[in-house]
Image 1 (cartoon, helix red, strand yellow):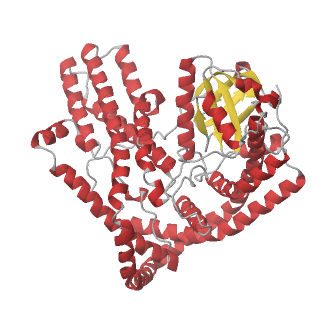
Image 2 (cartoon, helix red, strand yellow; image 1 turned 90 degrees about the horizontal axis):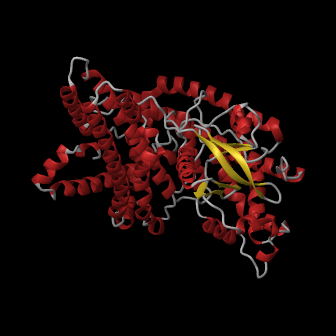
Image 3 (cartoon, helix red, strand yellow; image 1 turned 60 degrees about the horizontal axis):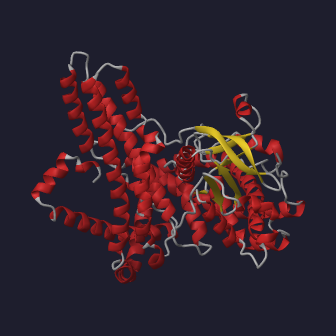
Length: 583
């Protein structure tokens, strides 16, 4: 089985990329340092704010969002020229896909043929759709397809395909052996792509970092791979460093003319920064590569993706090294900032308030005029699009949860101490991590993509994938919290002294409590916050505050109208079925 060389980049190209990455870091890190101060101020300010009494809330689960590990045989299009080769593939819990020459190699801890973190990939299950994508990347002139000897293997019909494509990483083409296996792999791979993109993994270090593994032999060879495998993608948190990083990315993009919302912050820190540079370089790289390739049409498109993969691997390695080198300075700076901000917090907040008052007096009138002209007419459409996405997804969660609880009650009445009941309890607890069961919830978020597309043209918003992934993450987190709460309450109220009917009655009470518990809504999910005491930061905070007032008014208007249009009978029906669960 063939493998590609460690890097198709010559020394001049590698040196050029190192210079471009170093330039990116020189522009990014000074802004990152300033945002660390702002993020530390926000965190300490929140700590000192009065805390509202805790109401009824679902319990938090200690289980982090994860991919259910999956393994099995897949056929991979591999080598030069490409051929279909049998492999044994493993989808890891951290969203990394690995493939081995055979199952025995995996079980004995042998070397992988290749591996890749699935951040930023798109999964296609249609051979025709994949071939059309290749044609769009490199339109063929007349007669090109007849010359494509290396890719005739893709012209022949294949059963149960799985195509993983990426704008600047090598394409991966697999075939499953049965339709059921294809579906299982599709659900697993889609979950891995989503959770890698949203950073919903946690490791030991507390920062978000990429593993840098590539398909085939990683750029730089085995030593490079071993160094990068030591780190893993970690959970995107609300810690000052993580918040500061995302704020810095947005500022960096705006200063380069990319002001609209998009999916630029999907992935780990190193992946996000690497993608920023790749997007800047992509047009020139693609044009340069296509001129130099001797192949045509679809073969040319695949060859171009492999070259871009090598470029991205080099960029990712350099960015990862730069962020690791900055880590000691960042840790020291955060410690110093925390001491300084805590000691001088009152003075800092007073200065910030003074600046905000002066700035608001200067900009309020023109800003209000701008908001009335450009925002108010569009705001109902935005709110409706976002609410439809969330409400449909949470309704699917509620339906699935009720079905699971009803199933448990049914088995409890039949055999409260049997092996089958214990298995049902275990399976109920695994619902949030079962991609097959959760697919109904995830599919609702995907179905609402068309509503989100309404935001693209009038607002230049291109972050539909981020919103869909966010709604799917919310569905998994809420399901996990609801399942955990149900099992905890059931464990407290079910005792060995109860008969079947009494135990079922207790479960009905628990069911009602869980459905009426209020899911915790954290404003920090939407709030971006001020930028400490910089003029830009205070200005942004003032504008955001006035804009959020309008958003709150529109939300109250829509939700209030919804409540007023319901009949008393509908109110009783919603109360009985746990409407508060998804409101």
